[in-house]
Length: 201
Image (cartoon, rainbow, N blue to C red; front, side):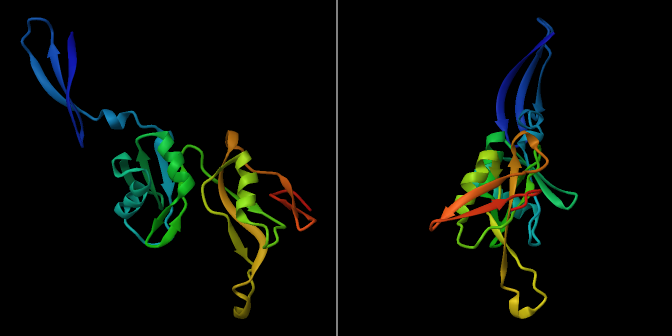
């Protein structure tokens, strides 16, 4: 029989004083990593930086968004950097904003519900990303900016040309495997239908 009394906190955990049995006179202090054993997969994010960088650089970039004290654990695993934060809410925050590492934007994906790559087709260049994002956000959380896709021309003279498709990473509601939607947008009196996988215009 013993009681435990918290003494203090420190970077490596929290110190507790254990008092054993009435009259035993045995006491002692033990370090326990309480902030860490409470962490779950819901506290983790996964990043695959487009540039060569250290785990420390990635952790600093994430800490700049959620607060450096919120970064609790970090390591490189299977070609990605895995970081545990102190709350699932921080995971959502950094997932929405993404991070910048060496002037390169890097998406941040929740570990517990990996983001899906969503391709939006039949989108003329004058339809703004903000309009698409507003519609898509009804079906999940956007965790990267919407970007235009290259036409993929073999000629170096046309490498700059984009096609009428865009791409975004999303965490879909209920962990759906795909997004199968179509949207109608009216611009200057004309209607335009855009769609996601398995849809045809």
